[in-house]
Length: 249
Image (tube, rainbow, N blue to C red; front, top):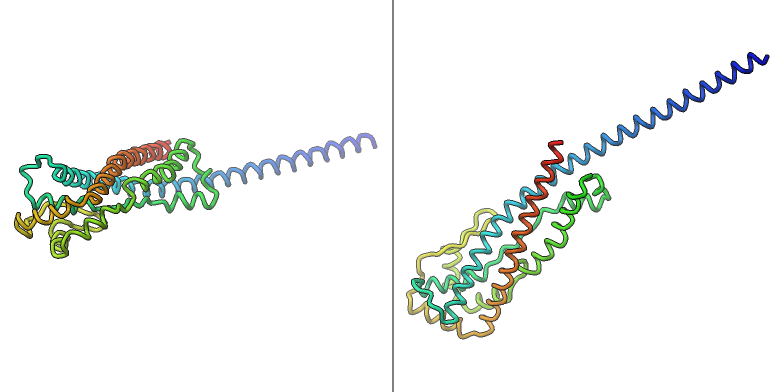
């Protein structure tokens, strides 16, 4: 009886051990499957983020070029208004500069993937802490700085467009400004009016002290804003480099 009891006890212990091993193996397999699912989800999100940031990088390059031209036009207009020598620029070219200095092109970041990660609580799927931090600043503080500088709609824009005659503005829209898809191109164009007529309009503009104050303020905003756009572009490239590292592991 003692021998039988000992055998039964050993058998029971063996059964328990086998059951425990089976449970542990099942848990390990389940965890492995869950990890695989999370890795696949992370990869999908990583690829989508890569597409979003690549698109933003292209737009930021265009934005930098655009606001650099607006800044140059605005400074030419101010130089003329403040009595600096702007030769060989014609009166018409200066008038076009006053108009182009009012242009804006708000940059709209592609936030869909990042917002989905945040709202679903799955941002932790992105294992790289550096990537998460860079994405957080890019979509947070970086965009706020942009929106508070070049992202504003300046009062100068409304004022100058209320002072330049309609027929002149219509000509400028048709011949000095080109829109290709989502891209704005500012350019010089052949005169619509003669130098005397251009000078009369310029005298009207430069005699308006409030207009010139608003132009100075807007150019100051662009000066700061260009630095912000360049920083956002660098951050885009940093994010893409980090994504490439993850994908090449």
